[in-house]
Amino acid sequence: MPASVGSSSDTARFIAWFWLFAIGLASGGERIGPLVLVAITEPALLVLLATVGYMSCAVFPQEIDQRGPLALVRLVLVEVLLVPTIVIGAFAGIVEHSALVGECAAAAVALLEATTLLYLAAWRLDTAALPLR
Image 1 (cartoon, rainbow, N blue to C red):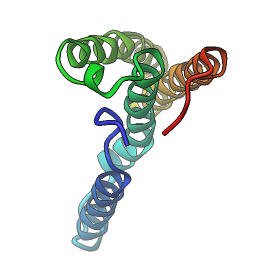
Image 2: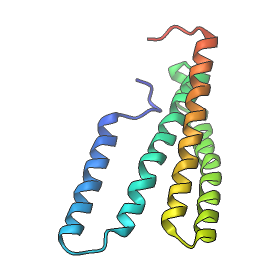
Image 3: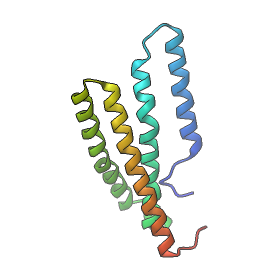
């Protein structure tokens, strides 16, 4: 597996710890509203981060390209893709006076960007006719 994609066990471990933390807060009588908001956007942002890795592997398939300068390109791409997510989420939240609406809008934008990147990565791999390992 390319170094940029990450392991699915890390993602599963993160999600498991998140839900254990949420259950612990709920059993203690704490408000879980903020946790619900994070539970909406966190999976969308994880998917966006993974698709940036897939796209960079599709554009530069050699393993040597996944380190060095390409790591900076992936970092900049993630930061650029977060700008519309944050702006649209904040705008929707301010207009509707609801953090939940803002979070849902941000998650929708992140998933739309991830879907677009995944489509472009698949198209790139299909047209390049690269041998897969």
